[in-house]
Length: 294
Image (cartoon, rainbow, N blue to C red; front, side, top):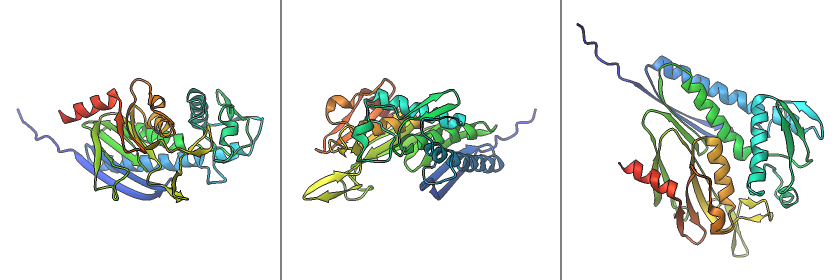
């Protein structure tokens, strides 16, 4: 009986700039280089396809064409229908903390009203405000790319990171490091770390992006309920089962105005740094951190 040596898995990494206006990192473990190359190509093709659906910056995207309509039922793709429906559901469930519109000045006026309706593959835009799916579509795209890559026989592990929206699928895990938002450089101080397995992570916060006006810091993150800078939370990192869910929850928690609003659903792990410098995390984060140490 012949004992053939086991073939070593092939580890692949590629980084790209200017993808969806940010950076893209792909880590793969596959049975061969040919499979890794094919999976990488599938991921890039999927991003290009979905950008033509969701981009708010391209006049030829499906979302841009949808925004040119008003009070009219039109047929949309399954992908756009899925994200539009999810965005509207989260606007309602979050009490307006998640609001998919671009205009900051008009957010309080529409935070409590539906922006669109979705029925099957039909959608109807109800507002004249400019919509934005930036806080949910990127996570959805990461999820779709993971599914595409994992559909290939011989793919053992996939990690995709698009501008901080990261998801791991398959063997092993991925280490997530949360840096102190008040440190001068991201590599100077580590606030917490954990390991995710078949899960996703997203981070949001206004400490590193914003400006000082009359001696007071103004975050680039706006609380849709008031139209003012969200100043209670400086940084929040969320772990969830999907990148889209992590995307949504990082947005919802980043505009919390008090500790009570830092509650989440079961299965959502978070680590928050308040503007006071205090760090808070929930039981799910503690469990993740403990499992990562074993």
